Length: 396
Image (cartoon, rainbow, N blue to C red; front, top):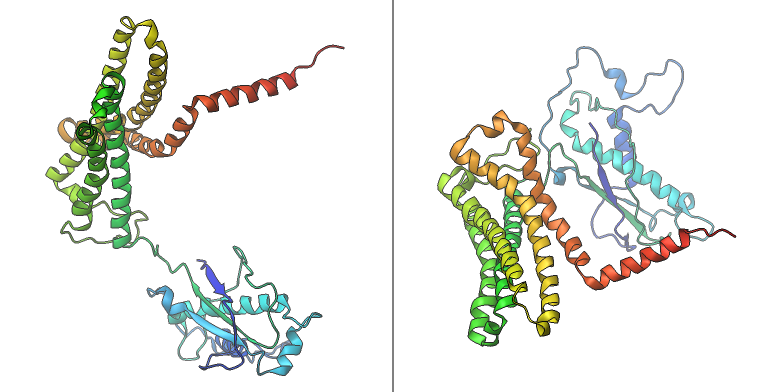
């Protein structure tokens, strides 16, 4: 097992220290005693504390749950009061040698790792059975390029990995589900509303000239699409009465409790998923049919208007097609599993992969919107022609 340790050198202390903090020398002495380090090395010299380890001593192999706060510790390098110590750290520019600071950071990291594993200490001889070394450093960020040699430097740190996922708490999971479900359903509802409003913009644009109708047909549906999903999932996820329990072996968040309620679950996927998806499909199919039928009756003076509406229709159709491809398979599987084949996913577990198509809908939306811009298409075509023209080699 490895532990990731974050160490901070947040600021240099003033010459006057208001509270007693251990020094880096104290940390080294503590480590020497804890790991049984020998002060004098030589053949046959077994004077270290590990000499007291025998087969009769039992080591506690059970891992006691620990929190991040329990491993936090800090120490100072007393430059302000220890003049002899300054001579070991000073460089040619009368600043602190950064290499020495790295050595102290390494010492502090091992000290914090041992503090995190303090319950495994053999109390009878006060020796830790584990051998901990620092293996890698993710990154080092230096906020102050040069540290003054006449001020104390404080080192502080803690373990950021404590044997379980700190973010997989019940409160985090619930709010994560609320944000995830809310944003997904809002995007589906807005697309469904835009599919319906496109009919009005193309064939009955004069309706929006009246303020009351504009609010009723345009702004009010958008407001409902934004606030209804947030309030609904706030009620069924955050405020739903339920006792949650975490499985320590499970690396994912548990499902919200309302999914076990058949009424709420069916209402959720029918009203919040199936209904808007059906609206998107039906509205776009009927829009294409109406546009094709209107082409036979179009007049010459309306050609320019039709070209503009054709571009808008194409953009909406491509965006709606993305929702159809991403959401229809998982919706059909949910319908079959709820009413016809309750063991569908157990019999064919590969069908569960279709549920991951929904994750591609939101990331692909910006690309579809960008590439639907005619100006961008012209720029890309011109750029491509330049590349092709440069690649052509003419005979001399």
